[in-house]
Amino acid sequence: MKTIIEPFKIKTVEKIRLTTREERRRILRDAAYNLFLIPAADVLIDLLTDSGTAAMSSRQWAAMMDGDEAYAGSRSWFRFEETVRGIFGFKHVIPTHQGRAAERILFASTCRQGDVVPNNTHFDTTRANIEYRGAAAIDLVIPEGREPSVVHPFKGNMNPQALKDLIRERGRERIPLVLLTVTNNSGGGQPVSMQNIREISGISRAAGIPLYIDACRFAENAYFIKLREPGYQSKPVREIVREMFSYADGCTMSAKKDGLANIGGFLCTNDGKLAEQEKELLILTEGFPTYGGMAGRDLEAIAVGLGEVLDEDYLQYRIVSTQYLGDHISKAGVPIVQPPGGHAIYIDAKAMLPQIPPLQFPGQSLACELYHSAGIRAVEIGTVMFGRKNPDTGEEVPAAMELVRLAIPRRVYTQSHVDYVVEAILEVHERRSSLKGYRIVHEAPFLRHFSARFEPL
Ligand SMILES: *Cc1c(COP(=O)(O)O)cnc(C)c1O
Picture 1: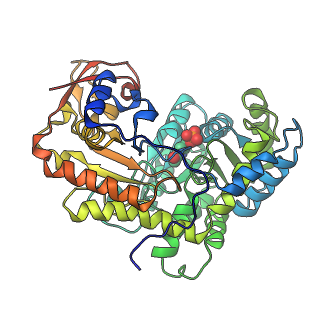
Picture 2: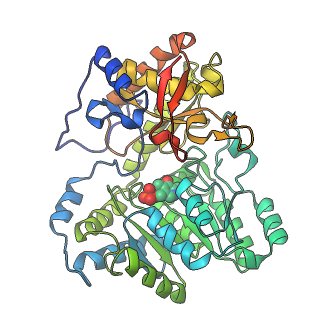
Picture 3: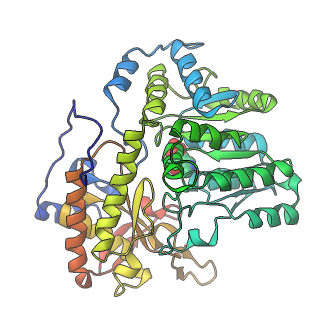
């Protein structure tokens, strides 16, 4: 069968509004051509992020009604703790309001000025929290992971030789931990193989350095292992997950991704002394250790979500529907990062719109046109987001790549929504030579993509 059947039926619906092209032209102009400044109510299909945008199940909503809001030792906490321990296998579970809070507490407890923390590729909040401690965040993804068009089954793998070299050059005492991000978000949602996790763990443990996993998309990564790595085809995903985390000493997690929840996160460790220190920090800024930064009902939603995300019918639908979008546009000639990752498709705007130079923001142009022509919201990941000003000359330096990310919220859109997105992209692709660049008329000194104002050229 070719049709992707969503392994759920719909009990509650949320209206989305089909605006006219004329309305969208005006909305874009009013938002100064910055899609972050458009009200969500004016978006038809919102592919800005997969974070915190999942649809919850009837069981999650039912569990939320049953949330125990006791300050200390609530029933919901014990359920949450037992679920997290059961899936990941770590001794100590520390609840936080989202992933970056877990990162902040972990790095505040382990990193010092002058340390280095290797990762396959650091997510932006991970990097920021490490640098805030005065430590350096280093990316050691394999060379294939940096080439958009190169196909490799595990493009998220860390380069083991590069890790050995780093440990030899910097010394193990300057490396408080090694991180592995599964899947590798910044590299396009590309998975890490079990063999690589095992090897990186071996190198880290031999040097006496703890290995932590940034677990945000752990279930998607485990499903890729099942599909692509010899020896795992008949293993249940739950067992694959257990093996992945058996090689690590702890993890950070944003429940806004594979927790199938709209907020929440946690930090795990096997180190009892470290856990005590982390709980002291937790109390300062997040809350008492039996709720962290969450309400009892949030703990319930995540406990149920973590079970549902391991359902293999769900995972098949998830991975296949993302791939469906990627394959359909790439077969028609749209250049994308290959192969499709777990949670998003990235269009290579530099290759698609060669007439627009990087300093006229081809990714921004494509993202604006997708909204204008079809009401779809994507995000530019290129020179608007990562361009740098040369501090001496004031001249702009373009980013390495000009990508447009289409992130897929979990369980939110059906195959006909995805078909609509495919049609819209192909329609814009047909008339790609008519697209024009933009210039920035106002920008903030940091994270300009959130608030910059543009004008079409
Ligand atoms: C989203 C994300 C984080 C941060 O989590 P938040 O819940 O957004 O704070 C960290 N690492 C990765 C890989 C992520 O995708």
